[in-house]
Length: 217
Image 1 (cartoon, rainbow, N blue to C red):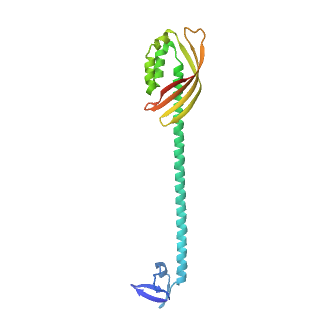
Image 2 (image 1 turned 90 degrees about the horizontal axis):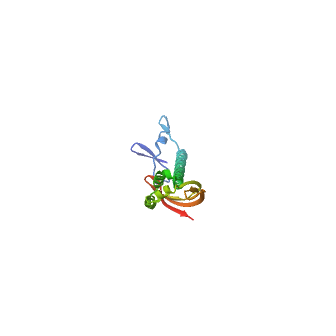
Image 3 (image 1 turned 45 degrees about the horizontal axis):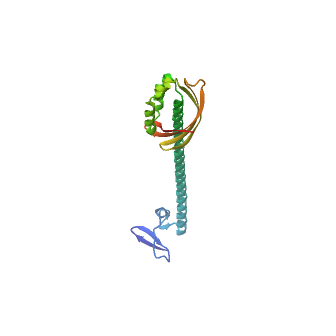
């Protein structure tokens, strides 16, 4: 091995090699002085030291990378779960509102008395929107009010079943089965009937409202 000096740096060129390389600084300092004799770390020792350092850095880097990956996967899983939970809770809240509005409307539609007919009709109209709002306004402003008052008509209704047929975005559809008992001056015995009503609902700035009413036979 020949010794080459350049800019006060000691470099080594192994025999048979065309290119020289500088040993790392930590190996340049690894020597002892004894008079004019300096003992340096051999090339074999340097190579082994370098390999060990590289392996150590690789193990540390790989461990850090795995930790980062595990953290990212955990965060993504938590985000997905949070979104799914939020979506499910949001759907359940909308479902409860649709059911509540449908139930309230059906009970208002089938429960009225001649003494409170104006308030009863006003309550029914408060649920209306869209085409049903126009229809109910026309119907309830007709002579039907005076006819019901004159006939001393009253009705009592109870919901037997109420199903949510569909619920998507700003529209919903429900189906109700109502047991109705009604009486008037022309009927001596209270009459019972079963109503099957399909409701269309629309979500407005005021919440869910009834947009269509279809009485099924």
